[in-house]
Image (cartoon, rainbow, N blue to C red):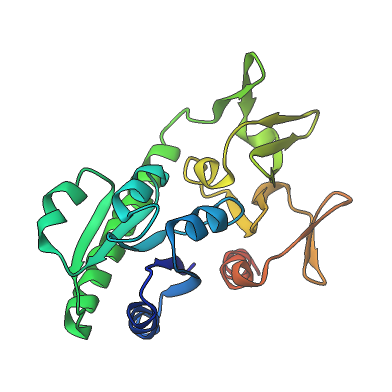
Length: 237
């Protein structure tokens, strides 16, 4: 799956340059161009980004203040003409610090560093999720923490600030982001849509751009289709 990138910069020329550079990274996908911190916050309320190219000197909400609001899973690449902020920038989940004007050579070095960062994260998450006996977890719902067996889960559905956990015998809501749950799941689970993660073991069929779990029909998002079908091909005889 491609890494989803967004640009946050109040300078149109800087945004255009980064857009052209990102096009050189085959495993990256630009999902948003925001010209202010407020615009970025509005976008992230209903969307997700793995990587944020973040300018520092912006009106109303500067890059440092916005970085403090981003979830820890989001990788930040600061882009600025000022070197004096470099030390402070690493107080956040910063992957790299790019000085403007950004050259193609410097950008590609940042790409390599960023992809290595996410590769290590995926390997670590996979090792943790495949630990012996790690076949359950707890979900906080209301005032209780409920133990749930992974094999019982059919799918997860994002519902604004909540996630609905649907199991074979019950469903419940938890105040979490789908992305936060995704990184904790084993490889039996696949993101198939912006709003859905499904248990591959519970799928019964794929038909007409939908996944079926029993009679429940779940849409397949266009940007998730290739990675899903690759998983299916590996299990096809």
